[in-house]
Length: 343
Image: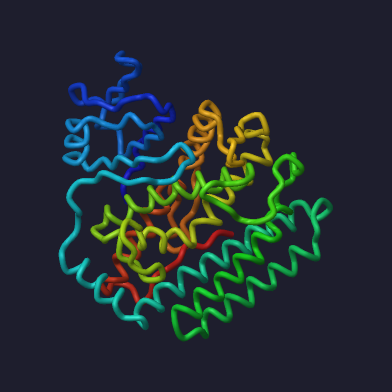
């Protein structure tokens, strides 16, 4: 298991990333405002528009440090990475299985079962801990819907049917997601999932969390030698990391949704942290995004027992663990892909 190193998040839009010796040099208005040793890093995420120097990108590629470029709304624009690790036979197996719908279905089915199960557990935890403050009938009905959806997934015969089941389950889940928001529910009103741009505060937080998770999962699958752009559930599309999105499915409720609900319910983020643009897009303010990123990094350091590996690992290592298990399955070392399930 790899050691969880640090990820540098550059939230100020007017900071230029450069190389100084073996350090990441942050430059604003022509002056250095900070340096970070590269040997401590596994990734750099920047939300700016100034960019990065060719020398820094070259050094990061040599050191296998991914640089992820985000828009100000948190949308992943692209990544700079070094040479793909792993052997050719692993990627050839990935491509062959991706082209075979039956093989793809076997992998995608497990991922969606994990996603539905984790959504179910998130709602059940809300029922258990806050039964007097929520609409129990609505939550229990959705839990039953998710449970039935898992049973239907086991029986589905093609990817289109699988996507249909997942889509209906996602709609039911987000219809009651607002019940899990226990503090400032009027200010953090959630009605439905929307993005590009997000139209409310909860969607703004979810979109940013999903973008960060996508970048980390992309790094994880590439780190074990897989091609992040060739998936099983998400089909090929130019510029889309389909495999990263596949592996993300089970991790969205387990990592991103839980994190967003936690920082809202603990009042670590409040209404003053947001900005509403002229087009009604809702964004985190610059200082607030920096706070969000700090909380995200702290959450990655918390411990969790992996349900399959039976080891305590940092939350930030879960994407790497799942990428490793997927690679083992593709190599034939495992009978099936073991999805990540929360309690």
